[in-house]
Amino acid sequence: MTYATSYDHIYLSPHFDDAVLSCGGMIAGQTARNQQVLVFTICSGIPSATQPFSAFAHYLHTTWNLEPGHVIQSRLEEDHAAMKCLGAEGFYAGFLDAIYRHPQAYVDDETLFGRIAAEDTLARDLSAMLIGCACKFPTATWYAPLGIGHHVDHCGTYHAARRLLETGVSMVFYEDFPYVAVTGALQARLQEIAATESLVAQVIGIESTLERKIEAIKAYTSQLEVLFGGVEPMVQAVMTYARQVQSQSEGYAERIWRHSDPA
Image (cartoon, rainbow, N blue to C red; front, side):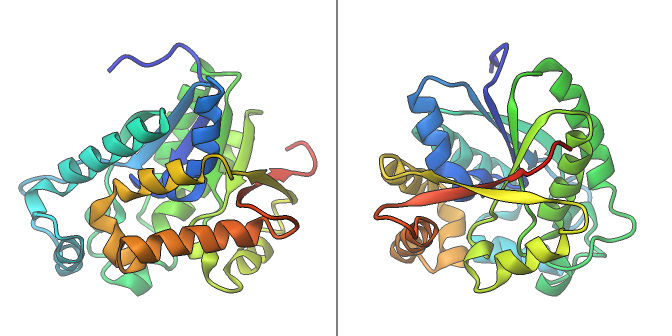
């Protein structure tokens, strides 16, 4: 595909669905205002056909109800549908998902949502790519996950974004949904990063775009059951958290976090 010569907003999405789950309302609002939005999906690479899948990968493929040899292609097709719904463009960086990148290190949910393995260089490799991309789009605002929930791909993306921030780009952080909906998860993460981050919240109303966000999330059919238990529970979870964020008035919102002082 042909990409735009400039972007107003670039969202770093660890996996195919993360930016839409977390910021779909904002993305829909930005494109409705004719702003150029790029969703930069990081873990989108196809694993080698000669490398056998781990038992954990086979388990996840089963829960996603996807054929092992066509997982990435199926998820890419889901993402294309979501991008079309939101009016955004998608870029696919080609890094492997953690379960394919280091199958001996990430063997279950505990390790996948735990400490980044010593041999995992995602943050370093991704930061080098992002710095090169930032030179091409100097006026863009970048959005990165806070790493709520500690998924290693989310945390690796967060660390790469921190390095990009040090170059002077405009960077904000978003709340990783649905992990942020767990009671206490947001505050726990903010406390963890308080030594290096001084952040202030900004609430963005999404009343006019909530429906488009939900429709875009529905495109990720392989993920709805494992993340939410189905379509209707997803709709309820999205609406409940969006209402919770917009706690000071009626309506729905998403929340981003900006630096209170220049980086």
